[in-house]
Length: 200
Length: 200
Length: 200
Image (cartoon, rainbow over all chains, first blue to last red; front, side):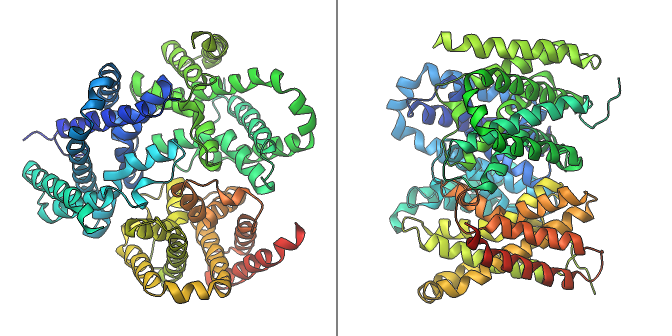
């Protein structure tokens, strides 16, 4: 399998996560009526590469992947554009969209954990960086909107779901066949996100 | 022309932007009556090097320029000191000062775009980094003051003006004669900032 | 004396600061009733390594020390666990605990200044980085809780105390016998924190 990118995962995986992350950011901007066009792109970028930026800053992979390869920016801008065009329909789909949000969290957890393991970090630090990467977009968006960080407060267990994805990916990590590990880790993420609220 | 600094632009350009940025930060601190002396210097530094810090973090130019060369710190502290001494008069000048704010945004856009192009980033990422650098001080100050990021909300089109400066500088970039490109890019920034509100 | 770590200070010094910083973060989370378990660990981590993260990001020591050596994560998690178990008693100890907070600020100031001097930064930038490191945990926690940064507003002079620690450490720095310099710098930090409010 070609490993076309410094993250040593197929680029399509990263871009998929960026696309749906940025779409989520656009929806979020749409909920805030004072946001202007710059705000839409800013939140799309924050949710689309926020986790990747934090990951690359922490690992010293600089400039971050999102700036080394223009595809990231183009994909995020496309998601923001499509998100604005179809905002009305996307909002109606709201309850249907949450699994996509959770899949994005799982994908960012895998990409982040993978990047940390490649950088020769140990299992525990790699899991923490994967978890931070999984919710980095949420943290950054909350910061930019001047809100307390939603991951710390009672609500959807996004960080715990991201942790589940990162732990699963780290345990399955062998350096080869990443797609199978990613698939299982994303399923773990979705399961925790789904059943998490039951424990509150 | 001597290129005395890792940014490969005359140091005076950077220090000019830092000085007026820090002066703006001091005025901003003056509007917030609970701010103490630490707050004044913090906001002066945030507005004076915020954009440069974000730029250097994203490009991996570490330690950031603002910490490699003590001139930056001295210039920002001088701006904060002068700003506090003459706060009363500077406030009266408020409406006269906004062109300086906009020139600072334009200068940071040029310095940021230039640094990204030198780091061999492509045109699109360089423009994005230049734009982030142009409003990085505003973003950081809003974060520190616990406010939503003003660039995302209806108001003065600072980010769009910074984008105009970054695009102009990137298009004119040849690696030589930076001062002419900077001059034109700053004019573009000011024009967009001036006419931007007409489109709302 | 063995210098077992990239910071070239005995690891125990760093871990001590991380432990008490994280304990302070746990208490802080305990004051905010909507915080969940993720929030407790996030604030413990933010107060325990926030300053170190900012320091390592600014110096380009990446991945940050907190992620290169799992001891940091384990110590912070232990502090969060113990903090939650004994929250009731720790809160009663509140007024007795503030010297520990201040000692932590002093330790982070020393570690940060030391790291900057080792990275061949000049005296002035090293002092600024030490000061930022001393209150980086407070800044990060305020950001995550969506609050204005407490260091900028009238209140306990934490940043000035950190600055006193950083200046003292930098003046005493010789590259050897760090423990004596750290001891004196921490005393300076505590004295400024103690007498600072008298000047308001």
